Length: 460
Image 1 (cartoon, rainbow, N blue to C red):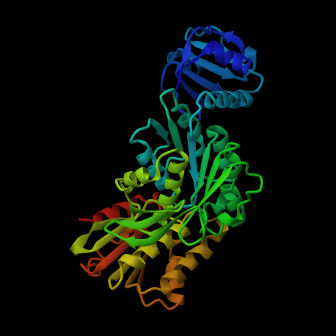
Image 2: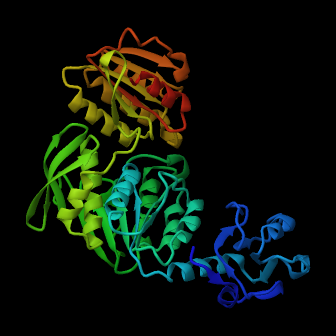
Image 3: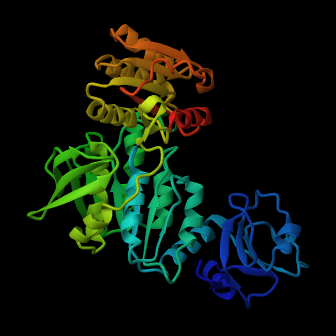
């Protein structure tokens, strides 16, 4: 965080000085109870509903407290704490955020989507880091409460920032955009997820579409031309530039001649009359889409596209994202235990269709969470997809995933089907199935430690 003078903050929030002095600077800022107070020289936004441990705050002083607590309830004898009383803590908090964000005239890219947002962010991080000081969100840690600390990582040395939007409920992306104020917004795709928080698919599409109004006026929106649900997002109020990326539909930047390679995809980028050969680590056409989104952003950030493509070749694919390894008895293990939703399951099955031709296919699928009242429907749809393929063995893990197995049976799958409540129950029961001719896909939620460990046990 860029250090800020307390006297300037007092002026900004129009705070009444209750205790302490203002001739010092803060180096950190947190919202009390949401974030950890770990360092000295910290600004704390303290709500009137909070139970405040003044002794702890003072012990980590010098501390600055901005609060809407009644004046008569505030201590005045703390030696290491400055207290500013404000009329509205919420207004002061947002005033501070807006002030801090506008200290920096830098490009800020934010990314959302059902699938691919973390990968696209990591691609951008990789390509930009060659010659720029950038700040990014960490891995897929994208919850709204993390947005304020991420913003404060920006300082005078930062040349660009790339952040990922998490979504649990409607309003989450709007909230994060108010903090980040992105100059470029990327929407990778809209599948099916978080229906428990958004009620239904229409609500989920609307929630993802919040990024449209969140991009700064005159900014750039990068959208997936191939994605049917993205086409339902309202764009009529957007005041900026729109770039489309795609594989099948007409788009601003497209990919042709897509070929599976050794742990990656070869393709040709078609952009502004040029045809540029490219390679991206990671399997699947969806990975090419992620790459196109990232390359479009790089071009908007002023990086030569040919240079960006060269940098992309050295990107290291994230662990457990359709990660291909040699497994027991010489089998091929495809570990996709990073996340689990219907869109990512379909993408994984498409990859298996390509790399598993004339092989013995073993599918190990876990529960799909956060589908609300539509759990049964979407698990059954996956069961039907599997029944339409030549699968040797289908293993489901968890109560919800049992619907996949039941539907696959109902639709006439010839696969050997087994159902387990936990991956721990499997043990060595698949040892006689898996051999050198097998391609084994493990697809499950990152919350399932047992499934992640089981995937590791199959690798050699």
